[in-house]
Length: 270
Image (cartoon, rainbow, N blue to C red; front, side, top):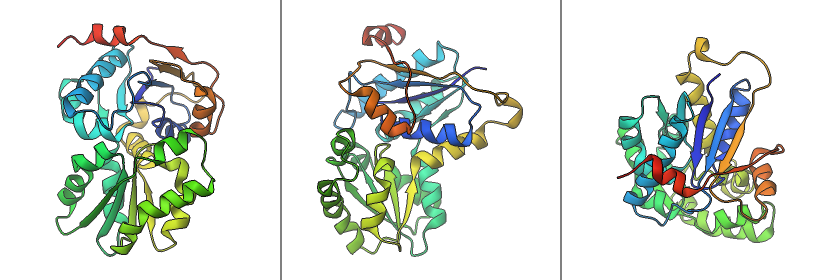
């Protein structure tokens, strides 16, 4: 079967892959992490769009049957262009998360945490208000959480202290629903839920994206039952990559292949 293509600026998008494994266990996945050019968050929308077009065309050349943009920054900056140019369906992570949050909120006050780029884009605010203009959205950029996850400090006291610092302004605004607007953040779901408290519903955009993908793939188009073959491609193999990837996936990563950025630039000349 043709694989599902998934890409991210780094490896945070593996939380989306983990959820795809859970809801579509027979589907083969081709994951692409642009680890040589991360992070996307501080980059301009034009640069993020250019990188996203390159990766999408690279995946299309490998005959993927759909593309999942498992990066909030790329989803907010590049999704309309990718949808217009791609001959196969393209899904981002923002719309599924927004729909779930709008469904879950009781008070109409929704919090969003993400990278600086995602928060500055206002993508979640636009998506939520398109669903219900009466919704109130409170956003907070949390740039320190990504390096804490990649360091493996998931249960570290420092991580909890940082989470409390970031969530305090949102909790004082009485949010009752919180969107994890960065694909790294589901790894911290336990500590985020602890700090937010039982009265706040945590919306995992990675999980919602996998569910949206299941709805987008009609049953007759799904892979037959059996053990699928997955591939993991990156533009650089950083120190401790395999350990970090296994933290995100909750499963071993057998093989990681490297792709030179020159190959990406070759498939998408401006």
